[in-house]
Amino acid sequence: MSAPSPQAPLVRIRGLRKSFADHVVLAGIDLDVAPSQVVVVIGPSGSGKSTFLRCCNGLEVPESGRVEICGRMLFSDGQRLPEAELDLLRQEVGMVFQSFNLFPHLSVLANIALGPRKLRGLSRADADSEALVLLNKVGLAEKAHAMPASLSGGQKQRVAIARALAMKPRVMLFDEPTSALDPELVGEVLQVMKLLASEGMTMMVVTHEMDFAREVGDVVVVMDGGVVIESGPPETIFTNPEQDRTRMFLQAVLTRG
Ligand code: ADP
Ligand code: MG
Image (cartoon, rainbow, N blue to C red; front, side):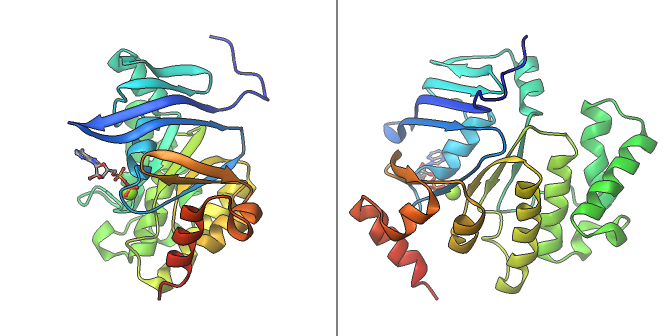
């Protein structure tokens, strides 16, 4: 396997389609994400954003179209990699969900160190010391031995980000990472995401945080009805969108409480 050239997209999606029974949820999505690019995906509820991200790390199997990660085919027209290879490729793609999904019976440190021990084959000592570095990065070094239940939502989400980073992913997917948080806790999570972006992490982020999209996004992708209705630099999408549906969606989000 040859490494992709620096210019090659890290994520390349073509003609992605997915239905649940007779309900078409993704009706043909094309998208390239370049290394270090931050793509922000916005759109109304039910437009297929979560399904789209889930197809990008193999949690959902699309019925047709292609998904390539780091130059390797995850899916092509219903064909998928064998499960073992899929698992390896999934390690290249970190995902953070709205609900933090930490293991409740493990300490913060153990939550982060588990994947590297099981899947990267690190010793406990090495996995723990890497986990501490990551906890430091997300500002929670003092919580290493705390249990998840004792943390605030914002702290849990920062641990979830550290846990995803522990697998050394090439791409990070975020699905409404701040939607379950009290408003005063949103900023600390966005701050960590900004730091990752500034370090050159390639990211796909579904969010309703329009200030984040404007400030951190390189490209904003607007989904509606299972298709990308437009995409472009945040400045263009927010000040001069082509589509009336984009305008209406932005108006609804920006005037919300
Ligand atoms: P969004 O994240 O933009 O709100 P989703 O991708 O979650 O959109 O959902 C898009 C549509 O797909 C919704 O109508 C949802 O009900 C449907 N859907 C999502 N997952 C499933 C599933 N596992 N089974 C059946 N329908 C689903
Ligand atoms: Mg969703």
